[in-house]
Each structure stands twice: as structure tokens, then as C-alpha cells.
Image (tube, rainbow, N blue to C red; front, side, top):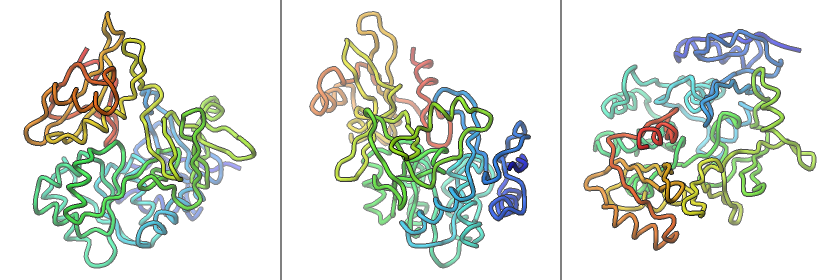
Length: 367
């Protein structure tokens, strides 16, 4: 059977009631801020999240009520139980709308930051409205960097029982700084197709299984999406059944060490320079650990001699490292071919969603 799918303005006040009705079955499924989503969906689908994916091709991810409940329950079990959430992310994206879903299912009312650009003073004011009790928020690395630069905001962050951090890799120095200040950061990995984060600090949530399939991360469990809205071709390509288990075969490279997942970047981001494959994520991990680096994105740009040149674009935290310092650090860890041949310092990195670096836009800008 099918149920109607209704576009709801991407405003928390409009979404909360609509999500509650979608989850308990008394209302239609919800497509936040997606006026082109008029359609019907399978009866178990409660939410459709629009995502561009890494290719920029729009697609609607259908999330079932049972999957959303499994995700919220596993998150509460991994953290400190149900709590009150602060919404600091756009509610049309999965990380933001999940703050609302978790609130609905926990029977709590989220606090929403005031509209407008993300500002540390706004975060401090919103935190003050949370009141006593267990409190959570979900951020992307850029937001964390801004909050750490403001003493009052950093103090406010330290009052949270957990700060979920996802969307992109975070510089090691930033994580160390946050944790040294008593901020309980939990790094998350996931995507719209898994109801958002499903691996916390490298460890899968309860019920989630992680495997490595030909170098790629494969995910299974009750949090998987029903499929893509109107795209059975993508369903067949992305969701596979192996040994009777339905899995999401991601484009992310990774490895498992005693059950802990380490991400190695995306398969389609690999840079081929002088005939050698270089994983940008591995280079980013080294550069992110250098003093003076707040954010980093590593890309390959076309070059007649090398095929592609490895380029590191950084957002500085104070005095940035020199190209020689970057090359020496990367060479020592990964070898000469992986060492960037260009270093670009930017005020900010282009993004294609909350916290996600837009490698295509950066490549175009630096080519």
C-alpha cells in the first residue's frame, strides 16, 4: 500500500507536528522544503530527504518510520538516554531533521537557534534556553571551529552531554582542543541512506553492521533507507543483498581494526599522480594534524606532466604551515607521491551541504 507524500516548509515549527503525524501514521509522509515531491510513497515511509549526493544529481531518500525509530533508539542508547536537543543545522538535511525526529520520539521539545548565519553568541543564547537535564546538539566541523574560537561558546559547548559531529572529517588538533576543554565530542559517520550517523567514534550503533567489500564500506541494519524516490535504478545499484542481508554499498573506502571503522576517503576522490594512487583523506589526516590548520581539503588538479597534482587547501587557525612543512609531514607518513605540490590558504572551503566539502567546486576554482 502507498501513502501520500507532502511537502512541508523547512521550518522546525512546521515540521515537528508533521513529523509526529508521519511517524505515528496519522498523517502523510513528509518531504521537508521540497515542493517537487508531490507523490505517493510506500506505506512504511515517513520521511523523504532530498540530497544531491557527490555528483550533484538530486535524489530523494525514502526513510521508513521503523528505520527512524531504530536510529533514534540506538543513538539514545549509545549516549546518555533521551534528552533535549538544540537544533543548529538546516532541518531539510538529514542531520538537522534527525534532531527533530529524535525530539518527537523522546517526547521533548527542541530549542532552535535563531534564523540567520551561525554565530557563537547565538549558540550561547540558545544553549541558555535548554534548561536543566540531559542535553545534546549536532554540529559540523566548521561550526565547532567557530565555537572554539569564542570562550563563552566553548564554555556553553562543555555543558552538553554529547556533541555529535559529522558531515566531514575534523582536524585532529580541533578534536584534541575540544576534548581538552571538557567538550564531549562524538564523531559520526553515516548518510541520508542510513538515517544519518550510524557509526559513532568508529563503532557501529547497536544493530548496525559494517563490512568492507572490495575496499568499500558496506552498511547493514534496521537504519537503512527504503530506497530512492522514483529511482529503482539507483536502488539496484546502491542496495545489494549478500548472504541474505540487505546492504548499502557506499562509495567510501575504509578499513576495520578490531571492529573499529577508519575511513580512507571516497573511491571516486582518489588522485592519480605520476601513476600512483593517492587517497585524499589520508593526506588530509596528516595535514589536519599540523599546527595552524583548522580545516583542510585535498584535491587533484589536472597537470600535463603528472596527470594530476596533489593540492592542499586549508583554512588557517593562526599562522598556517608552509608548503615545505606540509610536504615534509606527508612524505614522512605517506611517501613522496602523496605530498602536496601546492598549498592554498582560503578563508573558507566551498561546501555542498552542511559540513561537506565541495571538491568539484574547489577543483574548478583552483584549476
